Amino acid sequence: MRKYLAEFIGTAVLVIFGCGSAVAANALITNTQVTAMGSPLALSTLLIAFAFGLVIIAMAYSIGNVSGCHINPAVSTGMLISKKISVKDYIGYIISQFLGGIVGALVLVLLLGTENGLGQNGFGTASALGINMWQALLIEFILSFVFVFTIIGVTSKKEHGAVSGLVIGLTLTLVHILGIPFTGTSVNPARSFGPALVLLFTGTTLPIAQVWVFIVAPIVGGALASLCYNFIASSKDKE
Image (cartoon, rainbow, N blue to C red):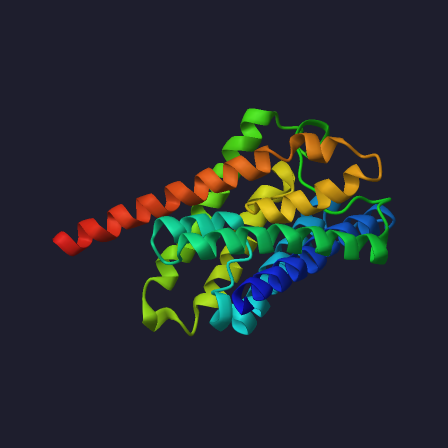
């Protein structure tokens, strides 16, 4: 039960600080004339990317010893395929993560309201680059593959334990820097579902209509990342 509570808290914190930073950064830049510091999109992208990366680092070094700090169904899927967690824990983690994402989004409503959204993901009119559904699926798959591939790799060796949280956090920062202009960067179904569900109850239907992309692509990306890493690692052992 402690592991599930840790995953719930970690995912809620990720949504509050990550998505909350996205809402706040975009709102501030929208209401502020940005000149010498560069374009508003470039500035907000960096701010949001580092917010997500830093919160992962914070959670990794606080709850990592309890649950492994997955706080992401795509990561848990990769860990299940790599046989690093049981099916029972996988189910418990997934439920805890989605509940954490919803509660985190509700906290954001109390703090920031919904006027500027909740840091939801999207494509088409909801994308800064106006990408279509297939492009959104592809970019989220690629980003999730790289993220989960790195996590499995860095956590597969005990000697990397001291720095694994830092590596994972910086990798999440990296994928956000590329992905934010495309979809806002999900790579995490729970992080996307929470804000989309809460916005549905305010009458905003587009995020929940598109959220399946941000569930399917990260899960598939995470699963294939695990299979790919396991193949590479097993091939090396046979050499």
